[in-house]
Image 1 (cartoon, helix red, strand yellow):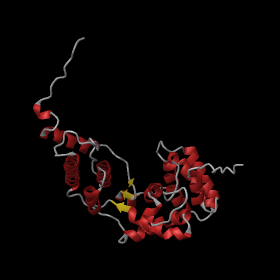
Image 2 (image 1 turned 60 degrees about the horizontal axis):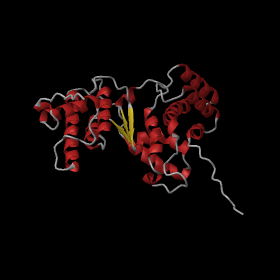
Image 3 (image 1 turned 30 degrees about the horizontal axis):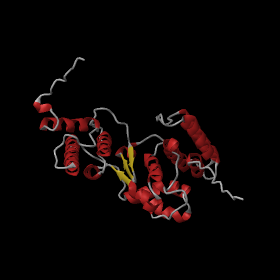
Image 4 (image 1 turned 180 degrees about the vertical axis):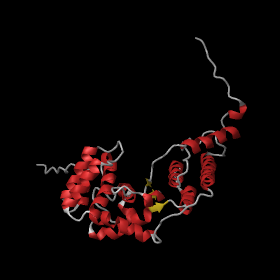
Length: 299
């Protein structure tokens, strides 16, 4: 049997060297990818290694993001009271989906979950966001909102990102001209299936530990439908007006998301248009369907 040997890397490129670490940092900045086990990074044990590596990657991300955005004129069109603004924006979806005794708690949770990526909030997010991959995406959303090249040098075309109960939203939100777009509502809709009832201060409900039991298969469909319905229901006072808007939406600007079946999506919205409470129709179409519990009486 013939043996082959792998060419030995130059000493400066071998795992654990300072040049190798610089390469890992650059890989993270360019792609958002990194070794979650931090193999090859210095440290006395795994916790120490992970801590040091995470801090170095985070510092590099923060430094590069601030370097790229330095001197860029930032002219936000942000309301003075973002909590009040978010509460007003999210009230229809909360009132449409939750019982009266739960609305205040859910609305408070959602209003606090919205983080618009200004220079100050972006700086804080890059310093404190638990997941390095999420921090990388936040940096790209922020840079793109300033019309700057992203870290990957490709347009990310992402204007919102949900991580557990935090919704990072691009300042491009206030420049959006699409009449059916509302990515604050879109990202908030994802919080419902990410957040446990206990986190919102709500009591236990049988067979349901999350705010809403949205079927995994249609979670994006649910969020897109909530986004569109938020705009349709807020601007169209009559059923005929809502039908006209839905027709316009179907002809121009359906979600460019391959996780969304357009036929199913439009059918859900059509049911919402015909219903007294369109929010509940969307919810019923997207909720996990459970089989009834069969009770044996014995004998």
